Length: 531
Image (cartoon, rainbow, N blue to C red):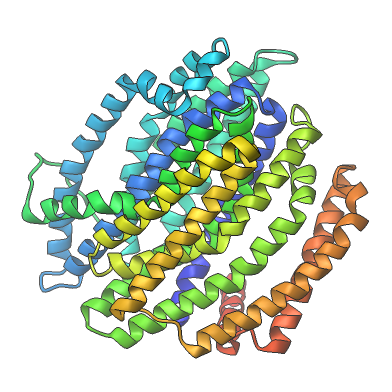
């Protein structure tokens, strides 16, 4: 478990920094733009390249490329075979990205119409969304190259550069918001802010690519761009990417479905959904992405060496870490959502009514938080064995359920119902993935793991009871002065965290070996810093 904890700690720590900057970005965005025409148009424009990024670059491409590259790296020819494979992939991948981006930008009016045809009902909103989408879309090609470079380093267990890259995105976007706010001036047109933000998205891609190119060169790796050649390995990668695009990206595919339904609801609904998802993404990004990124190359090595016991142990450890962190996070976010939305987002152009709606969206979304994270652990069990088809079918089943539920709940419960449908479909996908892994003998729950999770639930229940009691007592302070907002949230977090970990320790929900490793890692890090 030591190597897994170390890798997750590195990725999770840097991802936490990124999420904090992203959180600050969305807080500024809410206050500067509110939930209106310009905000909705930008959210749609940002959703397109960002979702394709998660779907293709960080999803399908990474889960197919990393195991193949890792196998070449640890094979007979080692570095030479790995370098040749990477060069061949880059030469084909680059042209494919340029072609795809060009086609999408030309077809952007049709794409926006498919996702947000109801924007046409508001004068100027549809055309502005098309314009912003064309400005932001080059980001996809740039960040896809970033994902490939990150994969080269991940295969060597160098996770820090790839985990740090999103921090650069959020820093540049914050600069875009501030620049747009300055250009707009008092009482100016909000579309100026949205346009500045759109430009900053593509600019961020340039900054990220430059940083990753430096990190790869610093690691002693060299890539060569040459005439595209469809070698057998490149063709195999392509065949793996096609099903993985869907299987690894159900959450991202669901984002398009959610966007379609959200744009049919009253103006501002899409913005509120995306801002609410930021709260949901905090633990998902820190825990889920860290575990999924760390486990794939490790699991691939165990499977290729026919070490089934180590593969089972690795996934069990990842599962335990995931539930230990996500179960209390989901419960706390659900109970304290009104406090978080009021304290962080309400102000400027973001009204108290917007905050109330957003809080209910958060409650619905986090019901699926454990499932979102566990999917990141279960999917590598298939990808490491180069089985890309099975996740396709489970993803398809859950997506169909998501659409079916949305057709009913959106009309009755609006944007909150839509968020609940997303959580339900993710849970179904998670259950299907585990059932198939268990049936094939690739991963199974042990009595020890089940007992540990049951004890975690007891600790979560104790924490939830305390937070439920504290919430109404401190309600007057969530929307008060900055000092009142800060101390009231700190009180909730400190009290809830203290109760959870105290009860978890008493009932045996914490793995003592895991705690010892985390403590030892902290001490080593402190000693290194002092030196």
